[in-house]
Image (tube, rainbow, N blue to C red; front, side, top):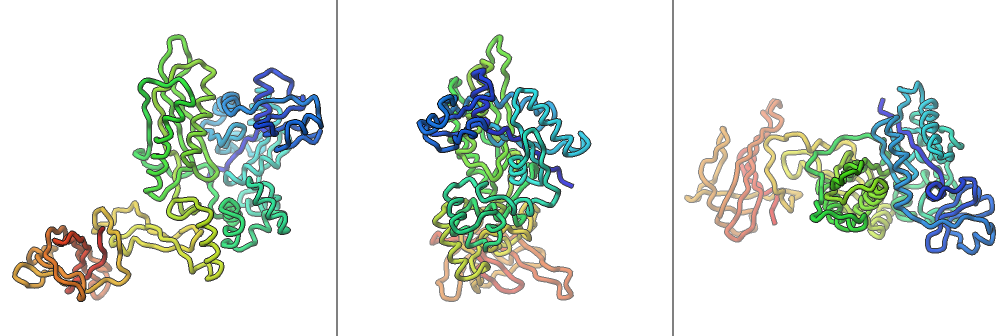
Length: 512
């Protein structure tokens, strides 16, 4: 059984962090304002009708005594760092999603049960003077977060194993982050996520957007993920070194932006996205300072974009700034968990374009779910074998593993165009005799002339590579199929992938 996810939610964290840093009593009505609008408020303020998005003058009209606090993301992260440090003492490997919300693998076995584990975590946070803490436990991140938001003050809400779908279906649609989507759903009479889940997938994506479509897939058991996964190879890590060292968080984040974009693009070339990243910050040693290099693992309920990485870096720098450490000499992004981008399938060819998504979903609704497919790579020897098509928005589940050796496959680069139906071709030597592949894998003579198909002219061969022989289904009574592939470059500059299949030549693909 895989480890369950425990989510710690410190409600109204921006308000709690601001009151705590200023030494003000936590029971006072207070609200954090950004651009003269309420960004967050505590329970005491909400009792006077102060809510998110309200203008400052309207909030003060309802409660003249409300504490007006300025929004400060750096402060929120800095104060939350103390919570993370204490939680790590109880369960190493905490994964903050944002200040006030952190996930970890449930230590239920150590504490004798999920309720006991939640009580121990809550007691730890309350010991720091943070009274409004709630614990949620579920099979994966999104459900665990909603469970924490459903829990009572200092209580634990544990969703039964395998019960995520039933729990999520009963939730109101306002748990979605997009206010426009929530408003549209409510106007259409959909008040719960269950109503959203019962709609066709293509229609949800076309009408309500990618985020609602992703939540629908989570309810149906797709797209969700636990706080676990495979470890990607280390060469995907990206770093940025600063010379001279930088002592400003803003300067560090600005200078690390290119490294963050390179990190995301490097994963995209492997058709992967990062859902759990370790950010390492190297700091200059200052005599008399206790601050050392900072290392923190961050999790994301979906996946990290370059902007998300810079946000987490800024929060992390704010969390260690109070120690008076030295300037930053370097930043390194290390993927802890990477999954196939097809798990989330939020955009076309690695992008996130709502207009493209909507258009594809509408076509899918007209022609049928199976009529619109997306190409994905899988394991295989030939270019055609490596191609697979899955319905748009679906998670591929039967792909061959690309990490296997696949002996006999051609080396990179991959051809740009793979022919749906290979062309009959001809390959001759200098004397005009057909070139054949011998039983031991050699060739009867060097290829000198090549005709890709019957309707094209002959070309002199400028260079060639191969053969890469493969014997397929050799255990069959007829001995299977023996093929050998060649890369041929003509004097006109065009390159082809040619295959000698038993006794004749075929053109399988072309190179740009």
